[in-house]
Image 1: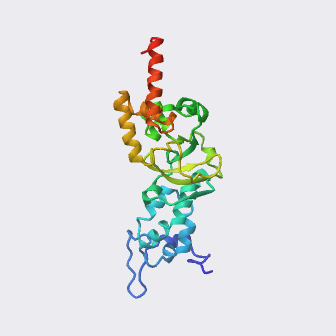
Image 2 (image 1 turned 90 degrees about the vertical axis):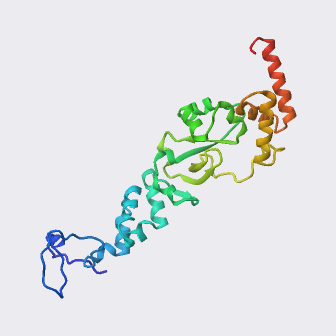
Length: 258
């Protein structure tokens, strides 16, 4: 494979003003080597650019893509971008394609989250202790207004506090319906479960679920999270939810809490 310059060339030759062989030599102190200068073909060689760009961070790769068409063609390559996204965290693989290319612009730790399947008896506070994160960080990531919001969901996204969890890991790009944004999700217990959720068996659509919750809020005169809680523990049966709420309210009145 030929080289762009001979080994005996003086290093200073790379900074010597470039001129055309068909015209008189004109010394210009402002002449610089750039990808637009056709005399320096190495800066437009795709293989050479790939070797250079593989060392760049995601931010520098984005800057390189704005230099010229030749650089953009290499720096915007999907494989190149994904590798730059994974590199700082030593990820093994990123599965999935985001709906927007802007997803790749940032690979900070906030771009990642752990998927936790909620078990009976768990709370936001207990999960915060388990994963060594703040309660408010969990609520913020999952758009939760109150702790009761946990009972209407099958899973929560947990912020990553220990970056070592990402080493040799596989993340799945998902658009979370509660977080309302795309996240690189890490499953500590294996691959994502693609089966449809079955928490609210009698409520078959999001729109229908919303109508039921609004109706319960009016009947119970409670907030959204409380209505969702009673609906979830009643397996989606509004009548059972109202009955359970009435029983709890009666009990509170008997012991003087209400």
